Image (cartoon, rainbow, N blue to C red; front, side, top):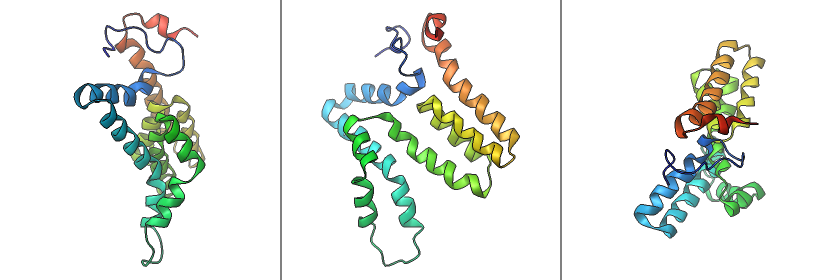
Length: 171
């Protein structure tokens, strides 16, 4: 799949170019190791991303005699995890970034929170709205960086990837 000379893959308007990053990586990996191993790797990484909140809760537990198994079973059997895995939806890769955002926002909103907003917005642009949380903590500078970074990471690929950026930006 050659994004520089290939067809306009996001002409349908469903994804931004950065939303194709997980699919592009899996497509290139499929050429090297085949379809089935690539699918297993993709779904394993997606499951790990979806289970990061369960692993975080396990790590922060108060008693040390608990097993990780109940946390993982509850996480795996939750409806959002099942639906995301069933569809292979790349939105599941946003979960670790959302966890970083949620845990660091209350402590000290810094560049890590800004980076997590930009990374989440790279997968799905609507996650740029998380920057509003920075306004609640009076972090105007971090808010501006998050918004500008999210805009840049979602608009610049339209100019870089294809030969006709004007047709990609049409509403």
